[in-house]
Image (cartoon, rainbow, N blue to C red):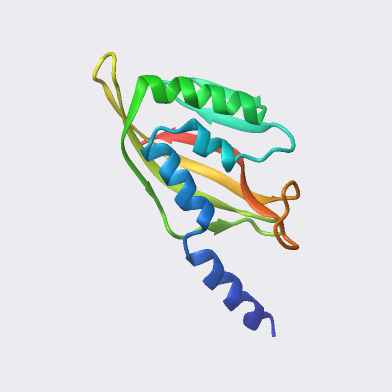
Length: 144
């Protein structure tokens, strides 16, 4: 009986989510406005980005939007791909989207590539259905 319930969950997590498409669009278009639409609105969002950003902080959704507005003004995305499989956390709601973000510093011409881990969970605010709307609740990255 347990295997029967795991199969639909596995299938559900293997398809790209609508929130993944919006995140990809936000990065490819360098649009903090689109990114703002998928950020959680309740509580702080932990954001941890390595060099060249050097950021590790708990930010409000508005602060997160402002930070990415500044980043998108200086760094142009050259590639952003999301792994279509979402990893789930044992015993917790939501999942982790993995992405590769490559970008170039417009001022210096230096190129960078990061591996992003975006934790997405249902948000009670603006609920659409019993589980709520999937929103970004955490962003972490590491150098590739």
